[in-house]
Image (cartoon, rainbow, N blue to C red; front, side, top):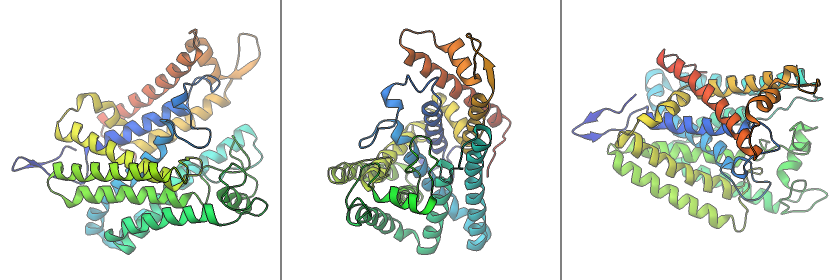
Length: 381
């Protein structure tokens, strides 16, 4: 809902239209990069960096975790005042469990439909759930003043583990695909890996959850900066300056501990949190302070039902890949591929058709979210 106005100064409230817009922009980006018409033809910014480095696609997941943290700061105070800390902890555990089970259920469905040998335990929703729960426990248990020290401890601790602890058979300080400590821990604890791109490790694995939790805590810190100041303009300066500092430090750290989404390196976590803070401040300034909202309505719809739209889009993608139809050559192909080839694969540069497929898929879910928003239906877990 829109911010209240008192004495002509914008006041911080528990819900910001701009935060829904930022969340919606992030989910829209996730839908576009996850559903190209064909993975054989994708513009480079819409692919993850192969290893070290980053692209636009590598900003999406940390941005969402940062937003989770901001939302926690803006909502937990009210929930705790209404129901007490014990009730808030029960709510948090319930919500984290549902999100985790949704992600695991999608992985299990893929095993059943596509006859894979093992079910993948980690995943995007699973990491969101774990980071949400652990961040809540730290936030409620240690207090607001512990946020930045805890984030720093996680980031420096992960750096020390990844660079100083020797990996059996590889030595210490290895940051390649096979020889890094995070991959070794995943192989030792989770056993046979089922991430489709590489069976030897997982980008949402166990050890790299530590710096991802740091990303979430930095989001809570940004949300606390919003809550602490009644003058939104001053809050924006604080968040923008903090974001610029974090991004700069992340880039500098990246010279020694490379920015890497796959490993969620500490430099990556810090750099992305800085970019997310800057983007949050810009969204608040444009949408809430300046009141330029018309362009943002579709993203507000999407952001108001973000998890529901992400899960529904995932299930729809699985269905489109599972359903088989006869192709022009008479051979069976997925309905997903058939739609792309018959409707969108019409350009000299096939990347254009592939992108149009993804944009159309995203637009469909924005329309669905818009229908839910107009009926005031918000599917919360």
